[in-house]
Length: 116
Length: 112
Image (tube, rainbow over all chains, first blue to last red; front, top):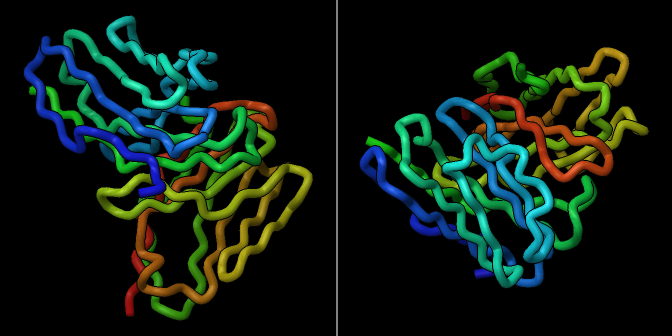
């Protein structure tokens, strides 16, 4: 498929457990974004990569959240010691060139995380 | 503090009629505005955008209007079709920003 893929699609974690969410962007896309979408809300920006460089992590809610994109393609969002307030859909998006408004962001289907 | 607001959580429209979805923003640094459409269990998909140097952008059945002085934009869908039933998100960004700031979304239901 040519779109952005994310895995797993659903994840149930016990409070305190570590989780890792994977994003496969569209091949050749330079920019990669992570967003968090709480129930009934719009997506909220977490972090942005240009190739392997994490250029903006201002949206990460705490130091329990960590993202990486070591080879400039696949990205992983890791949440340590999960809390119930981390329950949300985590969306990944990619765009062809360096981030600017004219570059459309293509979203994956998201990973729905439920922390019990 | 919500910088992008969609005050109507839902809208119901008859097939063939016009759908008007509204969005307000507070940050005067926003220069570029987008509408995304989302079906259940899928990610948002880009629909249409507008730059602050314009007040209207049209793409087929979809038109976005921007009133910069009022910090207000709207999406018009004419004619509305049942397949348009989805959640519509308004988003904004500074011209050279990298992050999208989204509203909470409006659920559109088009009845046949």
